Length: 597
Ligand code: ARG
Image (tube, rainbow, N blue to C red; front, side):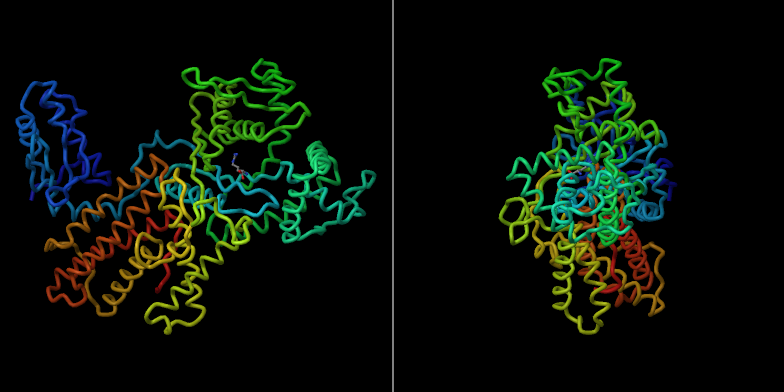
């Protein structure tokens, strides 16, 4: 056997490697290397990959495309990674990879060091802004989207060796804080927080609990919506809070502390962590300095009594200016976002800033990014991306609500998913052998898998229908289905160990496992595409395809009963690789595999 082409003897994206081989061949023929583009085959019965460039090249070269295709094949055919190269139709090249290559590559792909997949200069220092819960307002399904997508991306970037840190960027500084202050005051007017002459110290215990806050917020919000006077009062309290009124700050600090403690519980249930827990308030003191400098440099101007940064979109597209200071002197959401960029860039040296936020905030981020570049707060090297996501709808097609029509709280959503998973587990054969603790541990993992996979499998930008009963099914494209595939491999491998069977080496191929190996070899491509397009759904599709291939494989190959020991150990070796990839992909999706199911 000839040694493999060195370019593929290391962890690499298979399509990149094939592209390189074919591009070079086109160049050698005096044709544009662009024609060497290789894609996954549309006809898996005929080939693994295909290259269609000869057709396009033929026009310019005024040559028969089949002749060009033949020339290309003559150049690359001795490469041992191919087992056959044939011409189809008017000049498509069908590429079939050799079994030996697939075996080698599948092992490389599983053992590889993924931090080497990207070049070091493409690894920009990155910050990812996601979660974005608002203090005292319960988190809703929109926040869960931001959280699971953001967490998946932070895991993926780390896996690829990209230096990344995450920031929750809590909303802790808006009018809702003033509303709450007024609400507490109307219930307990004698608390020292409202006495402007109080010298302190303020009580160290919060006068309200998190459930009080959660109850008070919707009440206060409704009051302010229907009563202009109440709204003015809340706005006034917000302005005073921001200006540093001591009692308000002390009360606000209680709100923040109890909310953060409860948020930390929610996020730990979801197994999501943040490096920074900065809120909008964190940037407040930096704003006056920023505004002063923008004014001095004529970058911010007065328009209709407000201070704004005028911006122009590409191709003279009209974009409203970014408002920094309202006519009443108050700062806005965008003002904080601009100050946040300033800190991220100058203090942390971040070069890439990712925002995982609802697509309805698209214009806001467009304004903020353009303003940041225009004012030089972010120089042209700094890249900011709004990773927008769609709306979560209920089965009625309208934005997802509780049965009572309110906002579904994250906590309740998680319990709902876990309960639904528990019911499903009770229904499966053999469930009676598990005690309650084991069952509830499985239900926790399966419930979260259902929730996260149900979200992540959808194209990030599209809306989707939140259908818990569909997400918790054990068949179809669901989290539990994928978990089951992993658990099943695990159980086969455990039995193999008990029966003292050899696991690997991967040597013999009888043909049935070839599709499985081909699937495994796509892993680096999937990872790279998910990274390039910031698309967790690619990872979901990959594990679903792998699970489907596994099921086909089990139908044809009765692993534990196989008499040919070499074949059996090879199959077990392949299963081990599949487990590794499922485990890795699920880890990237933030999903944990239970021991049983
Ligand atoms: N708190 C905001 C919301 O609930 C999301 C914050 C997003 N991040 C940002 N830097 N603007 O919509």
